[in-house]
Length: 296
Image 1 (tube, rainbow, N blue to C red):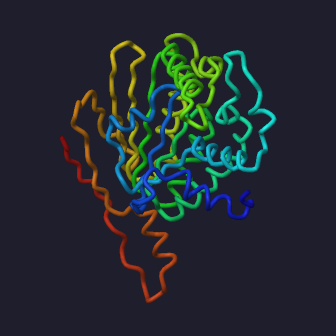
Image 2: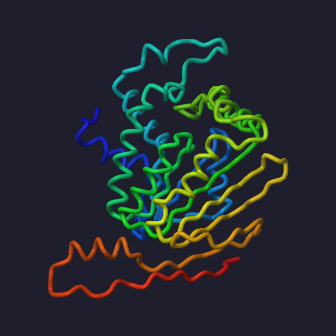
Image 3: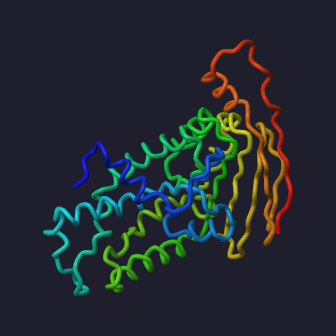
């Protein structure tokens, strides 16, 4: 079993990067996902073509898998995994994910801190169910000198999210080829994130508060993409704010996407100047510019 001293480094190399062969780019860009469990956030990331090689994925569920495998090797949960359930099968390892939830969250928080200090391109997978992210995340990225922050919010009807979460779990129970199975998400957890009928989810409310938070002004470009199918008709809306000013709202661009080429911002330039040798009066900082074009 790994010790606490080397656990973060091991988890980083085995549970956070989707393509271990690809080097992680340090372009000071970050993406965070939002939406209730079962909304289809991973699918939306692919549909929006938000990332390619060179991004580090920070996902507490991947870290949970690492911790569960570690426990399997140590035999920690053998007495639980041998229990026979009414469907005739035994408890699957990922069904014990709640037992490692706190530890996985702490590990991801530490990995996120290390990655932002290096300016890595990161994607933070989560639900945005905690309102505290609205202040903590922009502050962390702004201090680190990040140029671009994209939030992807996926909104689906409650019944659809519950159905997709249930299907994901049950497929893991009947697929004996999957050694870990899949996590179980109670319908009550999803229902609790949906407020009154016709109102946005708690996740959507927190995302909008984050996009509007004053601390986002420290980040050159902040983008909010909302994939919303709650009305029965899928709609994609994109809000973009540069240097604290909201520029545009795009709807249903189809296969086109906006591509931004962002030059270094003042926050990162000041940080670099502070750590550089003192050879005389500092030069003036780089002018902040954004070149926008369309890629089809």
